[in-house]
Image (tube, rainbow, N blue to C red; front, top):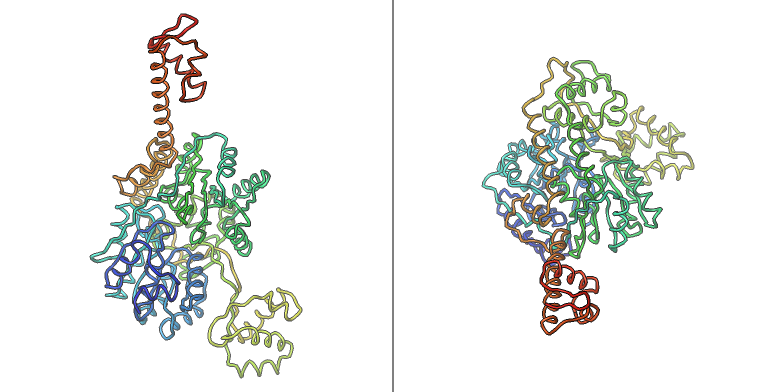
Length: 630
């Protein structure tokens, strides 16, 4: 089946978007391919379609667990077998899933980059019939990128495991420097590069320098119909701004990673369905959100990079209709951004302190901890050791690069269960232990596959059928686990921290000082680019496109700067027209002021009076106090 037929059968589309066909053709020819498509450009189809056209399994590396899970569910809905493996899963559960990839019909294996550290995963991948390696959010592999993630450097080892397997790297934003770094780090050979212009002709970029941000935000929302996103810096602001909008009659809610998963999902759905008009969020919201009719995206704070700003603002107008990306910036914001840069970047000593405190936090002896994973409560850690959140996150990234640990995003893992004894043994246990008979019957009747692999369960559903409580079901399952009847993995919704090496003492903690300084310089350059954009008086679209190596782009005509220039041009034309009419009239004789103003057709009465005054001051017309003449 060719790629167009696959697109039609599984996705229901008759044709590809611009560049998709060429990118897919490159992959099918076995070429390493780097594809840059803007937000909403259909990146996932560029690896999903060719993988479906070839025998074997496609390995997809992605840093975002939520996005991986969404893509896996979407593929399953289309009848395409796919699985995801990420931080927090147990060894046995991973073992079963990997077996399905080797011996079963699985077409897509999604992995977080941290999972490439696991010897279990690497050994099993070598036995898979892999047809393609896809690297999503590929800018994360570059040390020059705005969102560099050290575990991405491990992807190069996949190429050594799978020689001859083509690789496609995809991202929405990358400068030419980042593109070259991506190709180098991923060991890409004779790479085909496809770059769709970063221009968004329907998106009007606006920078508003207004001290009253709340008032300006209301004006934007009230002047633009449709739904929108408001991005703020921290979790507290999301609730504050949503409440402010609610007090002003706007249906708004807020979203951040600290909200319980079910509630996050509920709010997201209400916004997607249009029941909530405005979502106020941190940058945790938006990735993979498929809502085409967003009419405005407002940033209440300066972003830390133009790459992040372009991606977030680009969530507006994905349906091709007019939309607005608005950045509200004032002088205090610019000072604040530089201050956050200065205060948020960790020193070498603070990186060392962060590592030492982790050992104490998890109560690890020196030499202990290799390979262990922990639920990591970042807020609790920072509070206990009196450290700033931004500095700790940055320090952990440096420790990741040095190979001491990995830290995933918040991972929601539902409860999973699998019987560890045969069906006959379970039946025998029921007869011998009648107190557990009803629970086991409900499990066996409610869930299939419990003897083959881990199955997602909901304790609340089981409790409802038994007429008991959630906690009682969980307690009984843990007892059954202790007796060796089943394996019960309880749900979690926290970041996962994995130690790659056993704890070392500070004397043997190796930190690359030159690399830390380089990252500091990269961050400073990114911040300066944001400041230049916010303070510039050129076409906003041209400035963004120049940053992404499109120096010859034309003016967009719809950003705040272009519209301001257009108004100035129109004002000059109107001025010339009024002056021409005044001079022409006075060439025919003197006029009383009232009659002169009435005879001019162009402009308003005030504009005509203003021009008479200007022409008098310039000596081009005269007056005797009663009449005006040349």
